[in-house]
Image (tube, rainbow, N blue to C red; front, side):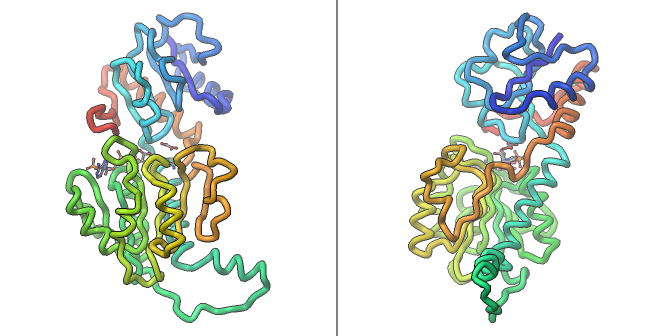
Length: 314
Ligand code: NDP
Ligand code: OXD
């Protein structure tokens, strides 16, 4: 029986090595080495070519190599088998680091000081807000959003979180549904987005949403921090909001088109911090171990964990 590893553009070597060590008795194949389609029981994928999972007659489960599954569900010829995603401490910790880093960066104006250093300018800030004066709203209170929210709370930020279904997370003000979103935005200075990309969330970070953010905060304007998916954001609206002052700054890890095209105005915008979709990378050590553990448990007769609800899209 075999595991098909399909992640175009990734260095497959470290993954194949780890899967082979963790799954003795399983052949680990790639689209290039796949000879016997009927032997494939599992697929571990990241942006596999659409249609490439069809015609695997014994396929039992598809594992996303990341937390998101939009890259799988967008395949129009996806076989009707279980899809499981990555939920693991390594990935969660990496994402929270990125979120905390970016919230602190905006709180402590680190980009301003980097610019001042380049200009050899010694200029103190006469109005440095404390974390407890800057309200953070987190869109998505799932595995990643909850951890980031709690770590921001531990630093002193007042934190709220928004989810589809109401959540009760100690220390975090919970909001749910469309009315909850309006209420949370009205009290948000830094908006962190950790939503999945679904038909319900596509384009949610648009001019309408930005206009609803608090304008009376201590940062002098609202800030957007998005590591969810590029399809959640309307980049033309974000740029227009940065020009008009409706947004003060943005930290973006994900983009409508990836890699971010060289001619995108986001690259050079002084108020935008760009990272190349690596807020929380899937490290082969942690992720191969998590997927292999799922496969071994499944073969012992245990149910798969972190199975995606296709109806919801995450
Ligand atoms: P989860 O599925 O655990 O959490 C998703 C959260 O979003 C849940 O709280 C869910 O609500 C909420 N949500 C979904 N749809 C809606 C909606 N229509 N309205 C309100 N809330 C909604 O996902 P994770 O936290 O594990 O991951 C989130 C996303 O982060 C991934 O899908 C991926 O796109 C992105 N990601 C990005 C990475 C990067 O490096 N940039 C790395 C890893 C992930 P409820 O709890 O009620 O279901
Ligand atoms: C993921 C990602 O979904 O890295 O894990 O984007």
